[in-house]
Image 1 (cartoon, rainbow, N blue to C red):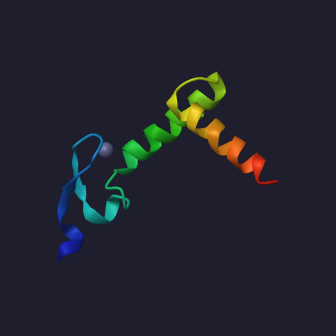
Image 2: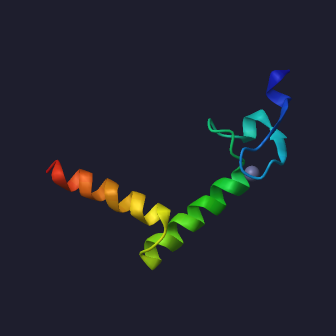
Length: 64
Ligand SMILES: [Zn+2]
């Protein structure tokens, strides 16, 4: 029963069945959008996602 409960996505606010949302309550559409944003920023070498990615790479490199 609770599997079919409609829950609003945290990003777009559109209601989706609980099973379609991930643990962060984000719908598949928004997940794809964020993935695209991430990739675009990595290619452009700018933006908050790129900065975060850069920090992650730096941190990983320091562990080597
Ligand atoms: Zn959404």
